[in-house]
Every structure is written in C-alpha cells, then in structure tokens.
Length: 319
Image 1 (cartoon, rainbow, N blue to C red):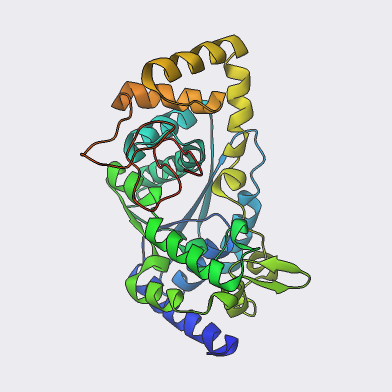
Image 2: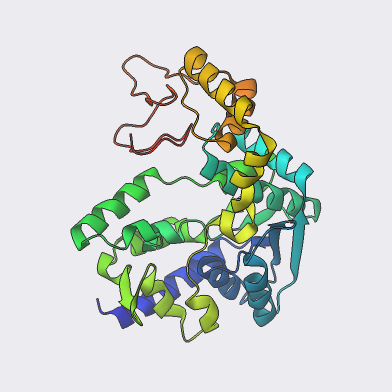
C-alpha cells in the first residue's frame, strides 16, 4: 500500500473510530494525537476541551491546545493546578496504578487532575489521544532502529501498553474513550508498514510520520509537525524531580534509602522515588511477588510480566 493510499485509509478509519467513541469532553494536550481527535470529533459534536498545567512551571501544552481549540471552534478550559491538587493527584495515581514509578506518577497525576476537574464541570466521558504513539512509533527511542528491530519493538509496545486515563477515570466514576485503540482502527494501524511510521522528513527523523502526512493538509502545520512532548513536559510536572530534591534533605534521603534497602529490599533511585515509595508503602505495603514461580523485579520484589523489560511497580529498567 502506498503512503497516499495509507494516508486516506488512516483518515477514513480514524474518523469512523472517533465517531464510535465520541465523549462529552476531550483531554487536549495540543499534540498531534489529541488535535486529530479534536478535529474529527468537531464534525459531529462540540466536546468540551480541557488542558491542565502546573502553576509556575513551563507548560507548552497550553499554547498549542489553545491554538487547536480556537481553530476548531471548540470550548476550551485551561486549569492551572497547585501543590494541594498535585499531591492529591500523586496519591490517587499511586493508589490506582499500584506504582511508585516516577515517570508513571508524574504523568498520571496530571491526568487525575484533568479528569477530576472535568468531572466537576459535568463531563462524564473523556476522549484521549492514548495509543497514537504506540501504534505509530512516536517515541524517540525507536528512531534509530532498523526495520525488523522497529517492528519487533512496536509489537512489544502493543503487548505491554496500558493507559492510566482508563483506570483513573474508572476510579473517579467517569469514562475514558480511546479512539486510537478502537479495535478496528488498531488492527489497521498495526498492519501498516513500520517504515511508514518512523521516517525522515526535512532532515530529521519523525515518529508517526504517516499519521502526520495523513493530516498535514487538513490541520495547522505547527500542530501536525510538533515534536512529541511527554505529558510531564507539556503540563509542567517535569519539574517534580527538582521539587523533591529541595523538599528532602540529603541526610534524610541517605538514611531512608539505606533503611528501605535493608528492611524492604527496595532500591530507591532518587528523592522523588523515595517520596512516592513512602506513599505506596503506606497504602499497599512492601511490594512482593505473588504466586509460586512468579517472575519478580530485582529492585523491588514485585511481580513482573514474562517478557517485560521493565517493572510497572517501581519503574526499574532494564530488568
């Protein structure tokens, strides 16, 4: 299938998927995936778009999301959250996701804030852009792989992927709807040539190349060719490592790191990791593998799925 026919198939299939998965609201980051959902959803409905950002932190999602919403004529609400909401989001994310992996918690805390604010604004179902990076090779660690390696890495991503929006929404009594992971669209996307997903354009390598080409004549160029920004970078929660570095003294970190290694057999890698582990330990206890013969993480002792190279519980990688 040529890239032109692939592009047309993607637009048509994703349009149908969004129509099947319309929600009252949209978690809008202003990245490619949520912008596409916004554009397609606006054909049939007027979802309320919601963007969140940490106060006093760089949050590039806000400007991009405002651009998308204004171009689509959609209602858009930006919510800046402070320390109290952040702490609540962190605690809820650790409890729901059963994890103290810093990357997971940084991202999930912002999602929890957005879902909770949206619920308070009367939104019962939220569309998200989850799955676009996994299906179309959006992550930079894939960019240097050969074709066979890329195909294998993508299949591994598809087997391992899970999205906190689904679990956090359920815990809050609302619903997350993921058009990219609609079974029909997922099947089409998974069947595309990996060489169409990671490819050079204009002197640089792009993930989601075919997805960008499919929409480059439909949506603003600055959105279509926006480089991927993780949730933590877009919402400002990327500053959390430095925040916890200032919150926790070096002597306290050294003492607790040694204590948890000795008592719990848990490896603590940073002050942020320590902060999350203490909450996890309070809520769930010391992690441990369950089931005879279960594979366990060498850094925390929790169960690890067969074939997985990272631990969902503590974030250890590679294992």
